[in-house]
Length: 183
Image 1 (cartoon, rainbow, N blue to C red):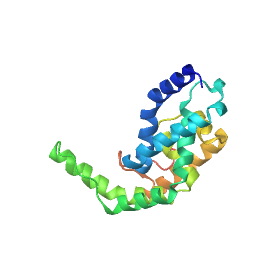
Image 2 (cartoon, one colour):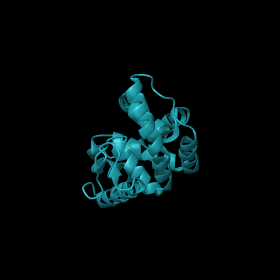
Image 3 (cartoon, rainbow, N blue to C red):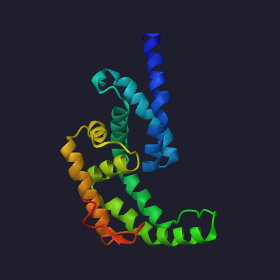
Image 4 (cartoon, helix red, strand yellow):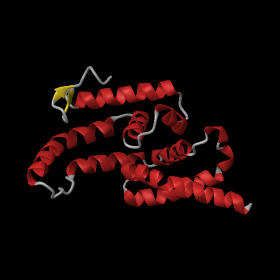
């Protein structure tokens, strides 16, 4: 294997590993993310011949590999979401009034949202998290998951509709009815 190929792959790792790690950590936790980042790049290296250079950006391809690895851990992910329901996060001790308001809002919504996220279909949850957490475009999600862009749009719509319904059709951040405007 030529040294330049290894150097190119090392540069790819350096550029994209933090993004892939963040995505995996959000999905599976830090400890699992460390292992799966390594597995993601090992898989990418083994499958480097399948990368299409016309894509120019390897990140969606890497997100696709990472998402497929997450699929192998679906049961753990749902269990983690259910556990998150039962164990409240540690409070931040900045401003007491803001802390209380944030805690009350988070407590009221956490169970509902984590349950709704856990109940989404695997495909809908993948699309939703790649767009909302990772801020990928519809095109990048389509490339990452190897699905048509129309499927991305319909899965995102279903996920938003389900989550909105779980919140009673209201946006808790604005306390207004958002049920119609964000579809």
